[in-house]
Length: 306
Image 1 (cartoon, one colour):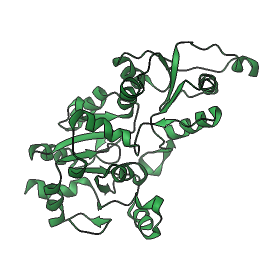
Image 2: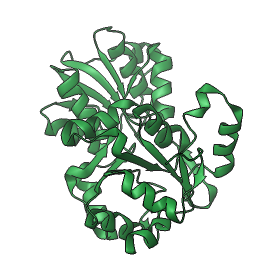
Image 3: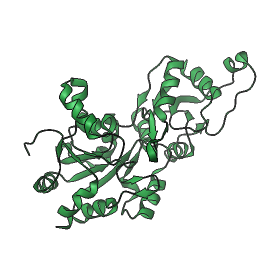
Image 4: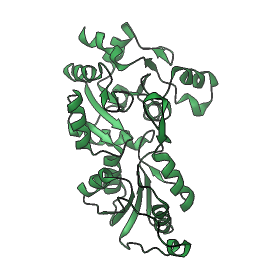
């Protein structure tokens, strides 16, 4: 498949790609669904891939759902997906702390119930979920009591993010032995109609700035996200393709891990960005240039139905 980068995936090229890979990694938001609606044709694509003997996994930076919650959503939208095929940053953060960091203690989380549940499922107790309003003055904030059993701070998406949570995270992280983990660095969450809201990356950066420390990032484009899939399924990078809508997370993950990459134009990034990165010849940007692009993953349907 000696083709140039950023090539339109169509016609015979689709079958060539299908023949060259055994495993498909799909991002979720902007790739297989938007909000609560499946991208037209997306369930058929992933289901037919499985029917044709391909292994399909779903890798998402979103930390607001457990694996079970994602599997339930997929079932409602027509995707034939098992819980074990879903790799979100809440689950992968739990894997990191349990199996890699060998954490012995509690976690202070800036995040939601899903993050807390995934940690608790591997035997890690959490504190901090839910609203934590500010009280008193600066002296009270600086002397806020801490849980002595907390050995790590994990920052995910948290609609209840507050100055008090930031203050507590700073105090915990003043201890150099306290681990610091961020689920992902996505700065904006795109919505329909060109709207957006602040993403987890904004919260991670705020804590990093306050604590004067860098977080260990779990989500894409971190290699660890792919490592989680490999550790459970032993897949071969050379026979794997990453399909996503963001150049700086999905496509860069694929580049970092030696995967083939496909950009779908139903989400965040557009073709002009990919072309500009390719023409820049900047080493830091070339990793964000996809091997292929499609208007939508439904473009694969004819070859799968063939």
